[in-house]
Length: 444
Image (cartoon, rainbow, N blue to C red; front, side, top):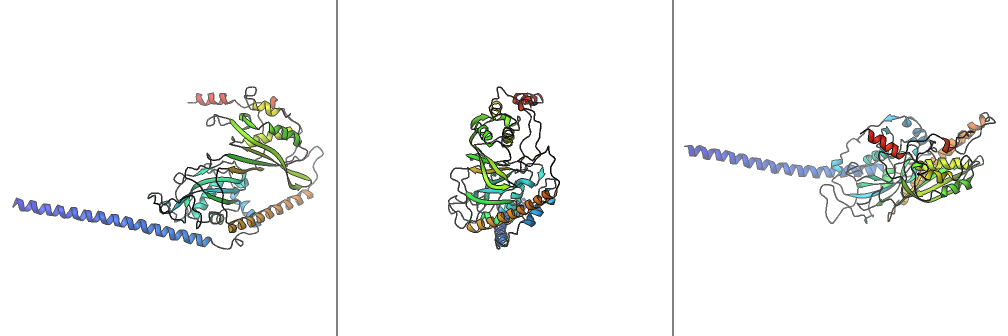
């Protein structure tokens, strides 16, 4: 009888094990089916999003006056940064898509942004707006870390760019034939271009009017927008006025070569320990633009890399030399850190005229379709007209105002000229790098 009970118990256990295995197999089948349906659903949503964005390129760009009014409104109000997620957007679903590593060339007008990088505590930033657009267009296939995101430069609050470059993985229309990456989706070879998503067109339809993608390029997965950059070029615009351009150009040439620029930057002793940078090009050029008889000019500075606020500090000292307030030799004095280990206190040049002009890379050619290029030109022309209308209004307002007092005159940057000047070497100085490091070490 005991044998009968034992055999009966064994049958029950065997039945339970069989049912458990059947349930486990069914769960695996359902998970596979769910993954397949999620991928199909995401693909459908992505195509629908892209189709909804397809309209007339010409009609989508208004005269620009309205966009100027919107940008100058409530968006400029300082507010704490908040993280928003596009409704219905799931990065896990997007990970099933084919993807490719892409470099994007970005243009933006920095007046209303708190810098480029979104690590700042304030919004809006250029980077945060770009990622909102990437989510809205279903191009993003992971967070910043997963997408191997990199940027060439971190422009400060108010600084613009016509050549910023970022790189990250984006969704692709193409299919890989040599094999799939099961976790991250299919990886598209960088040589394939035909049939790909028009990243410029898709993103520009949803970006704010003061940010535009002006080109894209497939790049290898070891590409870094920061560390693969060979050179960066900045331009700084200014009104000539009565500045001595010859003296400024002679002084600017002293920047050429490799020097220690700790007296021409905002020092970050906690994170930066090498202040030597190489400047490969410096020149002053005149543009074809003028206002009330004033000639618009620009500094062009090119180098492999730059320190925090370096260009604006260089320009500030050049302006003092151009006004005859400092000698050309002041550049040599400030570059000699043995004789001048502490930076004299002086104000940087304003940020608005500064532009990140270009970032150079080896074998990276940016693509822009003819339709996207036409839409971009129309947009920029309309924005330019809007600014010209504002300029006309300011000019009209200036003509209706009382004239300046006799002891006042306008500088090339629109500020009131300071009649007194304290020589740089007679001013209070900032702590040296060594003093800053000693203070940091004493806190540990």
